[in-house]
Length: 278
Image 1: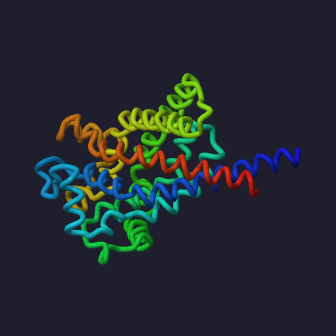
Image 2 (image 1 turned 180 degrees about the vertical axis):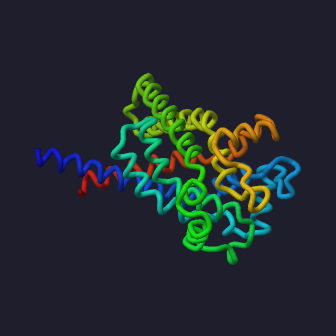
Image 3 (image 1 turned 90 degrees about the vertical axis):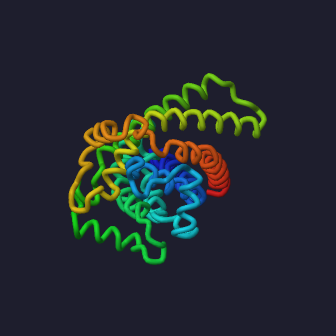
C-alpha cells in the first residue's frame, strides 16, 4: 500500500512539475495575445472612445502608446496561479469537475490580471500586481464584489471549456490510430488538441466576455453595470448584438495553435526527463 501511495504521489508530482513548466513557458510566449483578447472584450462597441478598429490596430496602438511591455501587463498573476492550477488538474477528474475546481483557484488571480490588462497607462506608471491586489481588497474586500468578482463567469468559462475539450479530445484521439513515427504522432496530438480547443473556445467565449466585463473597469466609475454572468451576457447582447459575445475569439484561437504546440513539447520533454531522472 505504501509503495502504491508513493507511486501515485510521484506521478502527481511529475504532472504538476511538467504541466507547470509547460504552462509557464506558454504564458511567457503567448501572453501578448491574452492582453489583446481582453482589450477587445472590454471595449463597448464603436461608441467606445478607446475602440480598436481591428487586430492590427490593437497591436500598433498598444505598442505606440504603452511600449513593448504593454503586451505583458498582468503576466504575473497567471504565472503565480500556474502551480496551484496544475495541482488541481493533477488531482481532479478531467472534464467539468476539474474545470470548476480550477476556476475557484484561479479567479482571484484573474481579477487582478484583467484589471492590470485594462489599464492603458504606460507600464512604468502602472501599479504592481501586489499593489493592485491590495487596492482591490482594501476597496471591495475578498467577496464577489472584490477579489472574487466574476466567479460565476469563470466557473462557466473553465467548466464548459474542460468538459468539451476533454470529451472531444479523447473521443477523437481514440478514433484516429496512433503513429509509430514520433513526428507524425506529435502532429496527430497537436491537430486534435487544436481542433478541440477551437471548438471549446467557440462555445465558452460568451462566458469569457462576461468575465472580462465584470472584472474590468465599469463604464461609469462608482456604478456597477455588469453584475453577474447571465445579466452581463443579456446586457451585451441587447446593447451590442450577439457578435459582441464573441469578442476576442480570433486572438484566443491564435493563442491555441502555437501555445498548444509549445505546451505539448515542453510537457513531454520535462515529463520524459522526470521519468528518467526521478
